[in-house]
Length: 409
Image 1: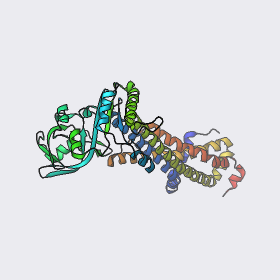
Image 2 (image 1 turned 90 degrees about the vertical axis):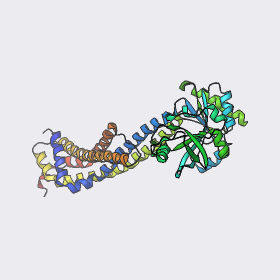
Image 3 (image 1 turned 30 degrees about the horizontal axis):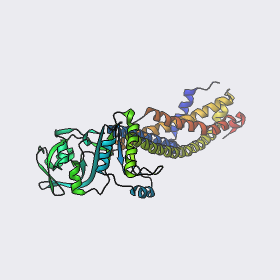
Image 4 (image 1 turned 60 degrees about the horizontal axis):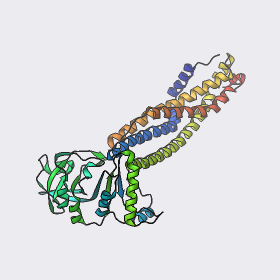
């Protein structure tokens, strides 16, 4: 007697349909495991793509000199980095003058402040003190109207400001803001430019800012915070050499002894992406571990249900053997049923995982990217669990004595 794969799968599906509640409870573990894998892989893949697209806008030929690294992993590290000297305008000028491989250098200070126009005001606007080159490095700031700062604006500590799209929309309601007066901490600034809208990053608006000359920022708020220094190399290939040159210049300025900490951090878009990928891989590893536990529990339940099924169908097994079914035929039949059972749970889990990922992407800033390989992996994992945990029940069914099975009541 040859085993019919389609018939065995049909028998398994009929068993699922005949015992709906038992089937659902049987597949809960598998469904949870596969749902978790699909949902998390979709969210993590979406975040990877989103972060790369956003971060790479800052330029593959640009790096930042800053007091703190992008990521601080402990309070002890924070205390250690906090002992570093603040970076200043003099540091920026030294890099600009001495670095032969630095195509452009810019400085940025920033803090949150309230801005006003007439009787209207907006809180927590990002006030950025910038040098002339700042808008053209990394993520280029394009203007919807007006002009950028000039060297004259910087040198003469001009009371001029460039505002983001959100500030323009909230304070001026479609009115042309150019030439009007914006107050920052009570100081009146003439609006000379309005930036194009760029959107948000993880739900945080990138357009809620006001840029003023870095010299005016220093006059208003002093130099009691560290400057962010952006440096652009001639091209991506020369980025490492430019970074080395800046490191030598800064260590010399700070009189840093050999083998001692630099006293500053050099950060690139690539370093941020590497850190993010390490983080996302950690999330993925934890998720797979949790999903594996759910799948194992689901596999144990499937094995128990299959044992019950073997007992319920003992006479059927006896009849099949009596008309010529071999041990291998019975073994394969029950294995197919176990795989079909688990595979059905995997398919339901995949559909549920896709739905959850899409819902999360709709109601939150977290993007989702559905990968076919993740769906196939989830269903494959479920089927593998069914195959593994179906071996023991199938083996017991195959070993039944046909005479004893036919007498079973």
